[in-house]
Amino acid sequence: MASFITPAQPAGSVLRVVVVLLLFELGFAAMPWVFDAMLGLDVDLASPLATVAEFAVFALPALALALGLRVVHGRGLISLIGPPGRATRHMIIATLAVAAVLAVQEPILLWMDREQGLILRDPAHWLIWLVPGLIVITIQSGTEELLYRGYLQQQLGALSPRPLVWMVLPSVYFGFGHLYNGATTGEGVLWAIWATMLGLACADLTARTGTLGAAVGLHVANNVFATVVIGEAGGPSSGLALLLYPPVDALPPEIGLVALATPYTLVDLVLSALAVLVMWLAARVALRV
Image (cartoon, rainbow, N blue to C red; front, side, top):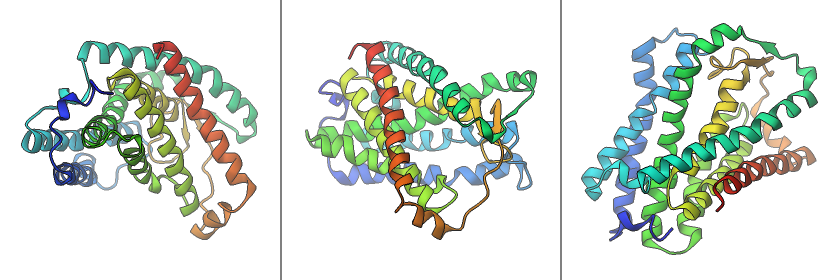
């Protein structure tokens, strides 16, 4: 961690961090506009092209982050990843290790939930979009890691040695960004908690290895299985999935909130924590950190 934060020193003021975050968020806010300009308003959001475009436009906030870094701190994106050769090696190892664990775990979970009635997409059609899908998922995951575990972890780590500052705060911020992933308010809260746990795992790997590679690898492997392997039939971001489960009936927001007060919430949180723990351990064992 000490070597990782070196490019961020001297740290400067918190105001600089706020300015870079605002630029990033502006780039993020522009994504739907660019998406609509590329594909039109009547595009099928469940199509492979729409899913690829949805992830590809994450290049916008990445460019905004690069601009903010250059203007505010006088450095480039490469300074966020640690030694490039070591970061690349860590990314490959972590991606393969986490993917190997998920390749064993996911079929078991699907078998346990086999009553869903999964639909198999045409494998030939799926293969056509596989490589573009992997590329844009890497862009999307890499962009998020550049901000949360790259910029924020470096900059806040240079400001304070306390893990609460450089590890927890960026992870909570990352979690808040996933509030709208759920179909209900309650589901959104669960998504945010899960993303916070994932952020903590990625932050720990970054601190242990001194590069962004392991965090990107874990993130990419997770998102590949959540996007390329399985998705909701007809749902957004499902265009690349090989396996599709039937659409889930939409629930009113108040049901989601009530669900948080049930034992099922605790079970869901425990399972989410275990899933993140397994991925985190797989990366650590493979990297020997």
